[in-house]
Each structure stands twice: as C-alpha cells, then as structure tokens.
Amino acid sequence: MLLRVDFNVPLSEGTVQDDTRIRAALPTIRLLHERGASVILCSHLGRPKGKLVPSLSLRPVAARLAELLDEAVEFAADCVGPAAQAAAARLRPGGLLMLENTRFYPQETENDPTFAGQLAELAELYVNDAFGSAHRAHASTEGVAHFLPSAAGLLVEQEVKFIKEALSSPERPYVVLLGGAKISDKIGLVRKLLSEADALLVGGGMANTFLAAQGLDLADSLVEQESLPVAAELLAQPGSRIHLPVDVVVASEFSELAEHRVAKVDQIPVGWRAADIGPQTLEQFSEVLRPAKTILWNGPMGVFEIEIFSAGTRGIAQAIAGVHALSIVGGGDSVAAVQQAGLAARFTHLSTGGGATLALLEGQTLPGLAVLQV
Ligand code: ADP
Ligand code: MG
Image (cartoon, rainbow, N blue to C red; front, side, top):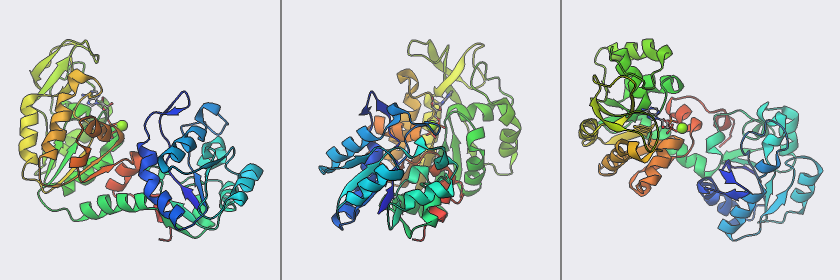
C-alpha cells in the first residue's frame, strides 16, 4: 500500500517542532497496519526545489512517527529507484516504511508520469490521506493514482465530510468570519461565502481594504490598493451582509514594544496602523455570532502572533466556543490561534489543510481527490 501523507512539518535542527500533521494521519496508518497491509508512506517536506537538501530529509519525521505509533518504521533514503524498491520488497505484512522526500525530484511537482509510475511500482494500491496537498496535482498526490487502484484515507474523508457536506446546506443563521492579511489571496472565497452566508464579519488586514474602499483614511495600515475596486464592488452589492470593524487597535509599529491604543476606524492617526479589532467590534461581532447555527472562520482578526494584538482573535475564538453551533475553522494561522487559546476541543472541526481547505471552501475540485476511485 502506497500511502501519501502530509508530513510537511516544521523541523528545527533535525527535530520535529510540531507533530500535529503526523498525529492527524495516525488513524489511517493504524488501520492499514492492523489490517496487515505493508504500508509505504510518502510525503513532501518544505521546498527543496527538486534537489537533495539534507536538512529537508524525512528521516527525523519517520523517527517521530515510530515514537507515536510505538512501532518500528523503516526508512528508505530515496523515494524511487533501487533503495526504495529493496526496502519495499523487504516489507512484511503490517510493516511500515517511510520514503525520502518526494520533492527531492523536480518530477514530483511537474507531475511527471514516468516518476509517478516509478512510485506506483513500489505498491499494489494507493491511498491518499494528504489533505493539505490535495489541491496540487503532483506526482505523489495525483499522477500515481492513474497507475494504481486508489482510495481516500480517513483524514481526507473527514475533512471533505465536514467542509463540503456541512457547508452545502448549512443550518441557519450561517455566519462567516474572515480575516488575515490579504483579500487578493481569498477573493474567490469572499465572493462565494458572501452569496451563501447570512452575515459576513470581516476583520484583520482584510477589513482595512474594505474600510479604505469606503473612503476612510487607514494611515499606515496594510491596505491592498489593487483590491480596492473589488472591495467597493462587494460592499455595493444590494443587501450586502458584510460587517466591518467600528474600532481597531492602532499601533506605531508591529512589535511587542509598540505604542498602541484603541481608535475609531475613522480616526486612525497619521503614521499609525490597524493591528487588531477593537473591543466594540468584538462585542458587535460576538452579538452576530450568538444566534448562529453554523459558523465558518478563516483568518485571524489581527496580528495575533504579537501578544498585544491578539485580544481580538482570542475573543472571537472564545465567542465561537460559547455558541451552540457547528463551528469550522480553517487556515494555518487561524487554527494555530484557536490552539494557542486552548479552545480546539470546543470547535466542531479544525481544518488543517491551508490552501486545500480554502480551495474546498471555494467549491473548487481538488485534483488529488478528483482522481481517486473511492
Ligand atoms: P490563515 O493562515 O488562517 O488562512 P492568513 O494567512 O490569511 O490566515 O492571515 C494570517 C496573517 O494575517 C497573520 O500573519 C496576521 O499577522 C496577519 N494579519 C492579521 N491582521 C492584520 C493586520 N491588521 N495587519 C497586518 N497583518 C494582519
Ligand atoms: Mg496563513
């Protein structure tokens, strides 16, 4: 069984800094192992750009997996060719083998069919549990499925179930919260969600561009000039359900030691920048969230990585945690914020897919999933 996982984890000096993604794949790995499959795991790690980069080896990741499973995990120093073939051939039923980083080959991201065929040769069946990579048509996520009978893993199944099914007919009121740095990354998402949600609450850097599109002076805040027309167009839609901040935490700079205070959005001082939503906005947004039956959240409400600008994001996480609703949070930074707040267990689903989550929310077909037979 060739099992594609998303073990693209943060490493520092050869140790895994955060094993969330490894843990997320454990149910599928355990199931295959217990059913007696010989499991060959493959993944990418970082961006080695088609070259062997020793600091991006998956060897320490295989070691962490072995610890988590309390099972031996073999490691092959190559993902195709003689080393991989010999290790795969030695594998017994129930055995586990981790292959080296697929992105050490440029053919991986090129979705080269010959390379995909070489991966496929190692196994008889293919399972894709790499939800975080499913929006990319690469050799190990898409190409290989053309050569082998294929199926989705449990993590992929769960992600798709929550995001697609829950949001295709959401129980109402359906409230969407968007934040983060940029509109341009997420414009497709904003359009789609605006047409479906009963209310769209916008905070974070994204709100700045909407506020600027209303003619406000955002001083030194992050504003995407090129997105002003589209922001204005969305606000002008008849019955627009976009809610924007009324106050923000303004700062002299983005740093722990920055001078900061609360200001109304039409009173941002020259040379200052919006870094978080203000308390009145938090209250108003919480009020809109209270009766919600379905809540979707993507993007922090402020520069939450810096403690003095994290209150808005944490307050929103607490507000959602206190509502009896189906709650989904997606996006790397937003999920990290919920985890930091210690509120992960109070959400229905934390989607760790990043770009894949956003693509699925937008209603795109993910190439890594479309190609699977089951
Ligand atoms: P996610 O990973 O959840 O999809 P994004 O990557 O879109 O979220 O956005 C997260 C980033 O947005 C964070 O690094 C945060 O600091 C930044 N951000 C949020 N609010 C602001 C703001 N007002 N000004 C500048 N950056 C912001
Ligand atoms: Mg992010």
